[in-house]
Length: 114
Length: 115
Image (cartoon, rainbow over all chains, first blue to last red; front, top):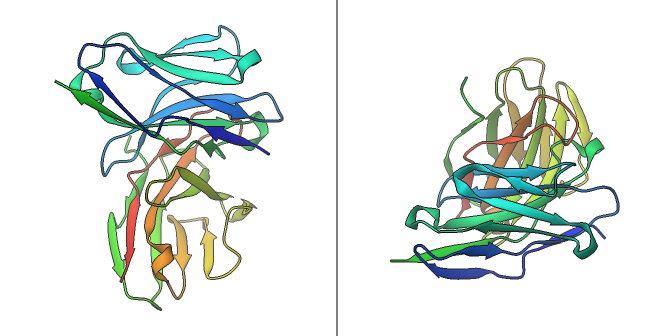
């Protein structure tokens, strides 16, 4: 079955510390992978995406993610977290012929301590 | 270029009433997707539409829910005879092309509360 797992429901990090949010997927076809961020009461904003090529992708707001096919993972990282990064983060997977039909993980809520 | 516009942002309905959620895609986008987000959960795909056509409705509940994307006007998600379990945030996304290598842009959602 196709699925996306974000093992951490809630993570708290100190401002300035590094961050890694985990994402594992199970998908039969070649996956297209995405990370979205959702601030409270808001819609989703795309942070970055991976379709092919270099497995380390850079996104907005200083985020990056690395695709590891052998581990079926697409973890999101940021070297230094800012208080404004506090939000909910969703990993999603799709396929070329599925367009915008994505399978989302359950999300990881990030809190940032001063 | 305005983003994906959803209205209303918040909707309160009594059990048994109908809820109509509207989504205007980004200019030039002809592909629309509806997702539902239940409390404490991720987004779940409901339906994928192109103008005047339902392409994939595999995530739609079999009863009470319907969606359309007419030739003119916004896409509509309709929920008849709402129940408390329909309370959720409903998001619409649109894309220009069908392939997954085209970004889907999300609206801010409609938060439906059934009382």
